[in-house]
Every structure is written in C-alpha cells, then in structure tokens.
Image (cartoon, rainbow, N blue to C red; front, side):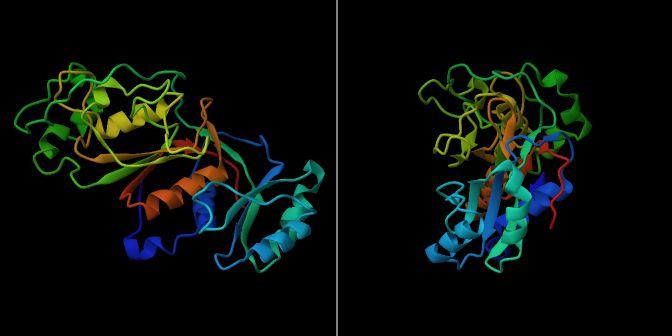
Length: 281
C-alpha cells in the first residue's frame, strides 16, 4: 500500500516516474507478453509536431495516447516490429523530448483468486460499527487478521472517515451496470469516480473478482449482518481497473492509473500486483 504524495507534490509526479517506481519495487510473475508494444512518456511541453517527428524516428510507428487521461502527461503506446524493439527504444531514449521509453510489459496478480467471484443484488446497509462491541457480520469470527491488529478497538479512534483509497486492480463490483451487479456487502460503502483503463470506459467493473475482494477488505460495509467487516469501513474507494479478467495488465495502464489516482484526490493507493522486469533507466 502506497501513500500518495501531498497535493503540492502530486503535480510533479510523472507517468515515467510511476513506471520506474512500479518496476523497481514490485515482485512476482511478469511475462514478456505483447512486448512488441512500447510505452513512451514524452515531455509535457511536446507538441503534435514533436510527436510526428518521434514517430518517424520510430520507423513510422503510430504513437497513440494510452487513454483519454494520458494527454496532459503525454503517455503514449505504440506497436513496433519485434526485431526492431531494442533499436527503436534506443533511438527514442536518446531524444531529449522523451522522458521515458520502455517495453510495455504485462504485470499480473500476486495473490490471484478464482475469476468470476463477484456479485449479488444491492441491499440497504446499516451504520458502521459501535466500537464498544464486535460487528454483527457473520464471518467476523473468521477475520483473525483484524483481531491481530485490534481493529475493533481502533474503530474508536478512526474508521477511515475522509480517506479515499484507490484500488488499482481488476475493478470493483461497485454498481449495477449492464451485466454487472453491485456486491451485496458493499451496499453501504462509499465510492468516488474511477476509470477502466483496460476497456477505456468510466465503468471500472470487476470481471475477475480480485479487486472486489481487496476493496471489501479495505471498506466492506460493516455491522450490517452480512459477510465480513472492512478494516476502514468509512473510507471511500476509488475503483481503477488495470487488470483484465485474466488478472494481467500493462505497465502503461498501471502508470496511467497511478497518475489518475494522485490527480483525483486519492490519499492511499493499493496495488496487489507485481513483476520481475526491471527498467533499463
């Protein structure tokens, strides 16, 4: 879990720095899938003319924004011939208009849960727990880790009020939208706007289950007679989908989501993913 820098510092965070941080600190399985795709972070003051010149430098590769949120940070991806990746990256890295250029590696869940664990129907929620007693959630007795950290006592001091936690994962079952359903035990949990960087939509719904599990551990609706309790039941969740239904996603999407979370007011970022690939920078 990473604490987001203060607001004054957040504006200085670049997508390239986010990728470097990701590659430097995570552990776990990373695979060389789709490594013909590269991710290129340009200086924020670059123009369309600079973009065209760099495309020529990359043998005509089509540099395209990673998402609708990537324009300000100038974060691009491009597909290049497999036998030209190294040479193109070397040329781009030597150009002063480029802050960062790297293979767009795939990252994966560290602790995967079976795909498809999600949803039932929405049910009205009750208040968060009175710190004087244990919550009435039926599976509370099995939440041994909460008791190890004295969660019930901690609730008398803080329950996460005013804190926004960005869950960068497979999405969250937080709404009833098209074929997706809100998980019953998130009925009283507060959410703020997020984004799906995999499908490029404003509906970061969970088609795997892992992100919903993580969000529930953080802020599951508590003392509502259902399921389990959340460690910070009054915190708000910002759902950011960067991993597919298979539990994998690109470095570009993850970096894009980190920047989104910082810019949109998240206080804490949670990522349960990893990879062994190292940045060359």
